[in-house]
Length: 214
Length: 129
Image 1 (tube, rainbow over the protein chains, first blue to last red):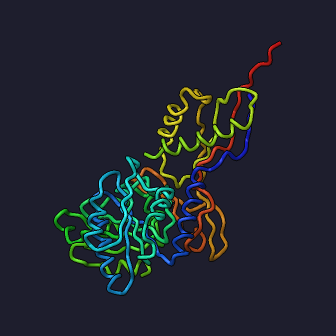
Image 2 (cartoon, each protein chain N blue to C red):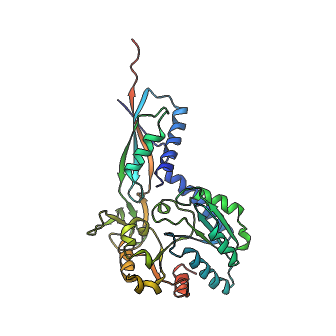
Image 3 (cartoon, chains in turn yellow, brown):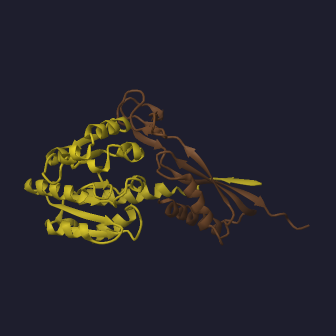
């Protein structure tokens, strides 16, 4: 038996390099970007629209990229809310990656925005391994998913800057304690920020923007 | 479930290497370092490799995975070393915490996110007498 050692290329390093290219492009255009992750139905799209309304009141120009396996429902919702938007269909891939986002940035009217929300595919596992080149990562959890979401997906939360615990107005109806989700998150990520939100009523949206540095 | 796409990327990189370099025999083991922060199933990665290499020059080769612990660097106090791991009853997995084990400040990741081929074991073809 004969052994050869050496470097044959790190496939995650390749992703980091592509993400760094996206980051540089966004910085050059003066755009602050947020990667919005979370399960299907957690309220990512609605929360982005609510944040966009508030940011536009402050005179900022906001756009969104919708990442989905198929369809353009989220894109249509962003457009109906008056946001410049673009749809990425991943073709069954369970997450966005920096390569896809790089192409989307070529097609996006970047001169029309200074804040860009990139809504990832609804999934709490795979997006954690694929940086996109955004300034921050936000994960949206809805209380209807149960209060064990962090314990079921700890590595995702260990690497996420901000968590929005959404639909808090429904917590009592589904018997979920939002504080328990927040406590689990602080265990895996002592530096992360938690905000309780209700996208429907607008509760917590200002606090979320402030947690994201806006 | 992104094991197949990443296994495919590993395979393409190795095939590129094999096109440029002649080996003294058949590749029987492919040694891969996998960072502990990645959300990858070892079983699925090995199965993806087995299926993707079928009918290629790497058919029958085994993916040997070495887990790389998370190492961090603290910009505040200068600590560099292994991350603290959170072990909670009922979680069934230990979680690397991205916080300085010495001073509690936010840290940078030094290692623990890699997925790279770092070696090959070759079964040498006997030279004809």
